[in-house]
Structure formats: structure tokens, C-alpha cells
Image (cartoon, rainbow, N blue to C red; front, side):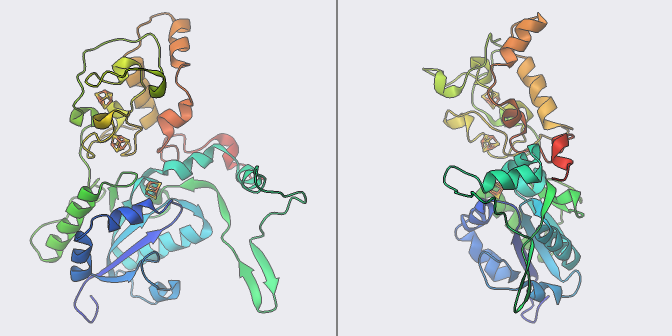
Length: 331
Ligand code: SF4
Ligand code: SF4
Ligand code: SF4
């Protein structure tokens, strides 16, 4: 508690796009409840506070930290450990923190290749191969910029996590429900779920919330949705040959994408009980293939463009694989 009697709240943005922060602001008037019930002590995107302010706090003095973003560099890791030490409840907030998300796809490449690509683009003239140094001496002292880790890690691979809130970003109504729950817990009107629980999401699959009919139709080929015209508005997209990730993806978004004619791409992460998201998805895709010969099955599966992006777009860093083997090598 602070001198104003309110519990402390923090939010941090590690390797991420910032969309999760915007999603919190998108809760509209609910954000006033955060202000009314919490003392916001650290939220770099919304207020001025320094790392040393957090370092000076007592251990466990922050009630709730929503941590979004994956751990990609030593600064991310330092803040994850610091906020873990200072927080009673640490929530991996959003797909980047929970499972790596889009930044985690960089785990397909060694860090040297990532830096080389970033500094040699079509619009980047770098004839002398100049790359950033992680430290540099200036008259005022030594300057540091964060050092990239070999791979991006989801939050739980670095610190103990109390709760996981999936989504890219989490849906605003789900964020609002979690804020309401924590406020009730603070007032002694509710209890927290068991440690390690997934919050702000469902416990089944996107298919269970999807309004489209499933008729056990089998397919002879996979096709990109933009190459099918017209798309049947009522039939399961997977049964139309469009790779839809609904069968392996956690519910909670009310099937937002298939409900408006786009396939689910999996942003709510693995459904309850799924050990490896990609493996479960391949199983689901295989179940609609109308073929028995291995060559024919291979031909149909080859019709999925960008297979890694399809089955691990959000989950590569959190998968059993975690990364391409080359990504672990130092260059
Ligand atoms: S989970 Fe999605 S919205 Fe949130 S920070 Fe990551 S990429 Fe952005
Ligand atoms: S596979 Fe996709 S379109 Fe089919 S029922 Fe599941 S979520 Fe809906
Ligand atoms: S349908 Fe799939 S991709 Fe779309 S919001 Fe829901 S979980 Fe995310």
C-alpha cells in the first residue's frame, strides 16, 4: 500500500509492439477504475517513472504487474526480474509475454543474421557494414545499449509467473473483467484463481465459439482465403480448404475472426491441455484431408503457404521447439 491507501499497480512493455498497452487504454471508462482503485507507480508508456524508482521499492510492494512483451535483451530480463521481485501478482499479459508471439518468430534466425538484415534493408545504405555497439566510451562515461539475447523467451522462461492472459492483444472486455476481479479481490469480495491459471480467456477452443457449421467435409487442397471466391459465409473455413487455426486455439475472443469471414490465426494461443500448439494444429488439418496415400497427403499439406508462420505464428518461442537450432549459435 502507498500513503494514499491504494494498492500499487505497474505495467511494463518489453519486446512487443505496444498493442497490449493500447488494449488497456481501449477499455475506455474502465481505465478510470484502475486510477480510482490503484496507485499506478510504474507504466513507462503512460507516465514518467525511472527504473531506480522501482529498485527503491520494497520487495512485494506492488500488488499487480501486467508484463507484456517477450524477453529479447538484457534490459528486458533485468526488468522482468526486478518487477517479479517487487510484485505480489505477476501477469504475463498478451501473447508476446505468454508465448513469444510475432517477435518470437525471429527465433528462426541467429541473432547475427537478424542484426545484419535490420541494417541492410532496401532503404538502408550501409556500405561499411556499421552495426550498433553495446557499449561506447564518451567523455561523460560509458554508454550502454541493451544486448540482444540469442533467442526471445516468453516471460515464464525467465521468471515465475502467477497468471497468463493470452491474446494479441487481449480483448478489451476480457481486460475489463480481470480489472473488475482484482478490484473485488482487493475489497475482499472475491478470490484469485489458482496460481498458474489462464485468466481473461475461455477454456475451450475458438471452434466452440464459432458460428460456422461443421459438416465433416473433406478437402483435396488448402487454399489462401483471398484465392477462394466466393467464400461460403456459413460453412467452417477449414472444410473449405482455408487453414483456420480455431481447432487448436483457446477460446475467449468469441470467434472474432471466423465470425467476420477471416480465418483464426491463433492469437489466443494453445487451447487448454494442448502441449504443443503446432503439433495439435497439424493434427487438426490432417483430419480434413481427403487422401490416404502419403504422396497425396504431402501434396495437400504443401498447399499451406508459410507452414511455420501458419502453425507457430504466435507460439514458436513457447513451443516445445522454442527456436531453430541455428538461432542458439552465437555469431
Ligand atoms: S501480444 Fe500482440 S498486441 Fe500485444 S504486444 Fe505482442 S504483438 Fe503487440
Ligand atoms: S475451424 Fe475455424 S471456421 Fe471452422 S469451426 Fe473452427 S474456428 Fe470456425
Ligand atoms: S479468432 Fe483467433 S486470431 Fe482471431 S481474435 Fe480470436 S483467437 Fe485471435
